[in-house]
Image (tube, rainbow, N blue to C red; front, top):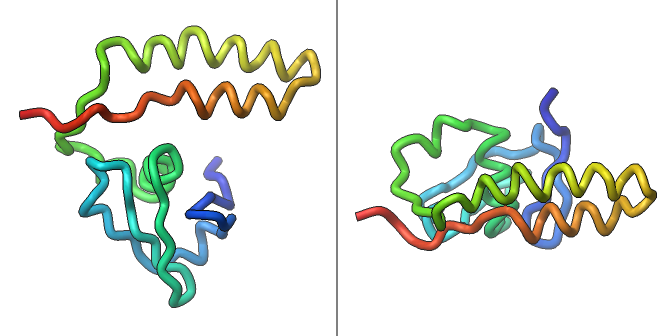
Length: 110
């Protein structure tokens, strides 16, 4: 099930209200989102999340580079720990843990 809302800049917007997305600078973790005639900028995790939700194939062939095993740490350590934190009632802290462990690209492949 797709999420109905995403964060772009300091706003929460409906996916259905997005008119278009410019991913020219996605390698730097930045996209421009056109929403109801307004331009918003999404960065880092938010930029990748919007792109993945709208059109995952848009990232295929992109020359992004991550630190080796960065996604493994996020997926194998942070996700399970996040679930335990939610069970213990620390939902906001769990979401923060998730967001800070999402790997950021360290550059582009040559």
